[in-house]
Image: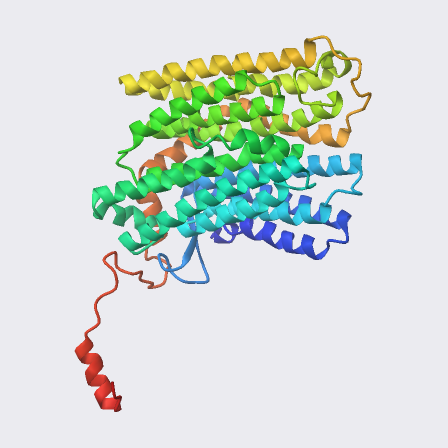
Length: 530
């Protein structure tokens, strides 16, 4: 039985729903229903796709043109796993934001814009994960950038406009670098199809290939917030509304990490920049967490831990081994859910305590003990305390590093342990100040809405489920890593002539020269005067 129809659904469903929500901008309740139903369908079909592609990648050629000429959508283990995790997070955040709107009243909130923009963001994320060519990944990034800017500046306060301006300038810089890389790659190889590129990049001058690799890493490194390209993140994310910050922090940087995983394993398997990536991973871990321990605002503290933990994922990729990549894939899935959960709960803390400043918060454990539990579990998970999934992911990365038994890998192993201990220190500091230090007398006497607590608690259960089912998930991640390390799986699935048309792309040396003498003969026969 063919399941090719499953592949485009994670892109088409939110796109169609975004158009429908925009058309119904005067009916906010209908917009809510459309958004929730669309994201629930995304979760179902993404999980279904994850099960189906475990037997092998599924390729769909848009418009009926055969790869590599046509635009291919490719569902494989990695993309399906990322789709499942991201759609689950997107659904939880959407329900949380609807609850926030119901609790606060939507009189001044731009709800009519929020729903279609959020769904467009979901479509952009899915498109980036399923893209079978570099230009489609670029289109996915641009969809993310436009939707992100609108969501980041909702409400129009000075701080949000300023943060949005920083975000969009950094995003445009990343897009320009990516677009330049695309032009150079097409000039050098005559294609943007990932499968065909994996063949042709091995045939061009190695120095040219190295330049192309550096340009792609620069573009994706900005998206993923790898040090020193991460300074924009702690200033941009904390100013947005809690649901927007949650989905940005949990998900968007991982799209950049995904692009690095895909291109490094499929296009540049020689690993010429692996050592450079390892140093960058170490710097990202240490600088990020040093920034976190100096913060007195819980949102900024978590934003810096986000930067630090991107370093763990880059570490796994840079190891260039199956166990390293498998551990990185598992860690990405874990971190998306945990980081999003924490930011949603910080939204509840801000609501209950009236601020996110750790110097002004205090005594919340006495007035909101349930909130203390909600924060404590994912916080310990983020810090990597056993037996949570954060601990399992870090152990996997440390084992992969130790297995290489070379000095640089050991430096990264030690750096990972240090960063983990500092994460624990930063988290305990936030926990102690927010919940246990003597509180102020002006703590708002507000009751947390169940409709906001529910989605945060549900996502917390998902993080615990990742811990409970860590074994099967780790096996799936390792199988994904195994197929990614052998590019023939991907290339054969996309370029196999079976069931495809007879499309041919431009030769990597450019189109063949036209015989001008034949043209002159033809013109003479038709009586054309030059």
